[in-house]
Image 1 (tube, rainbow over the protein chains, first blue to last red):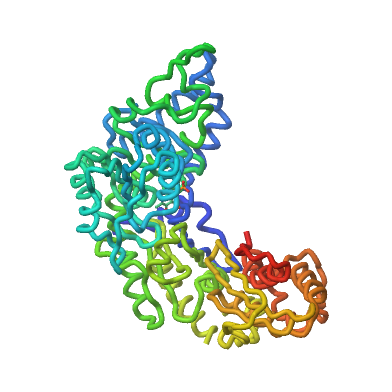
Image 2: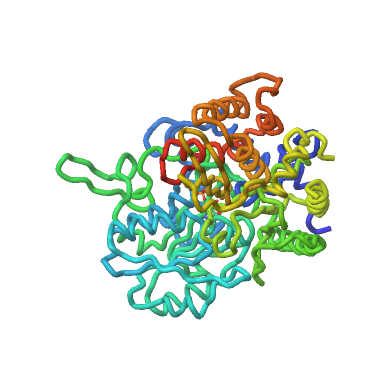
Length: 406
Length: 150
Ligand SMILES: Cc1ncc(COP(=O)(O)O)c(C=O)c1O
């Protein structure tokens, strides 16, 4: 077998946990992923042997920490195939990355009547930062509609792309629906009109190989914690020319070259956007996560997860009262569903009794819930460390709870 | 297989979830309020008819999980005929028991509401059990805005 999931599972200590006396079946990976020992060991190693503040000291430890921190930046650069290290900005996560672009790029460029184009399947973190900057600048937020499968209606997207559009920001893979958007096509269409494109890669990055140069996107955002790395660290990729022209977002230490009370000279990229002490160990931990995933291979991960999704989808269809929310033809390993007469919150509590962790709620995508006319969904989201047997546990669990509810 | 969770999902809860009592619009309500649990999207519209400080009728509409629906349904049955002060007292007792603030193990004083006492073992679900009650409290205070459990 080319994909040895049993061996992979041994890399994740938490997968040996029992919940209510049952083996943990962790299917909430879209919310956050678990961490392999390689990452845990790296964090410990950093704090026990290599920790000091970065970019500041002449002493040995500071140099060592700086080398590791910058080494992690290089790992991330290679992972997404960015052209240059200057294009990799460490941030807290996807949310902060989008806010950075909204407040720096957006706020400095947008004029009243200008438009930002997003889609109807966005996470709140790719809606609210744009609403804020629209309020500040008088720009207008436009939303490309989706169809009942949960796919962007491309003709409508194209029609909304006009000379007023100043930025497109869409999710690469939807956390609520699993939809993988045709982002390459979206970038081509936008660029044909001279409009830059930001991609929210929070969900895509753990599930597929991402090449920002091949996509030709202008900004790409993701979070470490959804990629088997620590929380508190994430990445904003931006094309150098754009980042260079953008004003800084936050002021403070590290982002300056020279400060007097009269005038401040900003630091070069990427430091211009990294004010203050960064998440040092977390960044290094993210580098370890990237190494770990690359050793397995993102393409192998993607094809294994597709098998899981296909199997889960087939088995879910055995349950007549189950409705899958999100049936895009190009879809990642997320199974959002509702059960007739049983609220997702009850599904979540009952499955938890069986040791099965799923998310129940609106998944920070209330407009998506409104579109499908449901208050919430239950969501099983898979990772490469999940197994076919765990899919069976999920389906059996759902069948059992339907029986209990009667 | 779900033995342990039977203290949360008692038969009475299932019954009220399937057939919620007083699940209707009230045309002659003296107060009406919308409640919302942003965490899970539960929504309730509560109708109250108060006459001379006494709750003559309560009804509700909305969508929610079994716990929030059963809690709302039970509440409409329990508070009818009580004064506003008495209702407030019932809420306080119920709230302190389901949040675990009140550690008693005998729930007799709760009457019918005792079936919901098991919620205290499921902190994530306390808000489901209290949404209707928070809405009622707000309605009685004539605080007409949407209440949220957050
Ligand atoms: C599609 C999508 N975008 C953005 C985010 C926000 O990520 P974070 O909370 O790590 O900033 C998430 C995480 O839930 C997500 O799934």
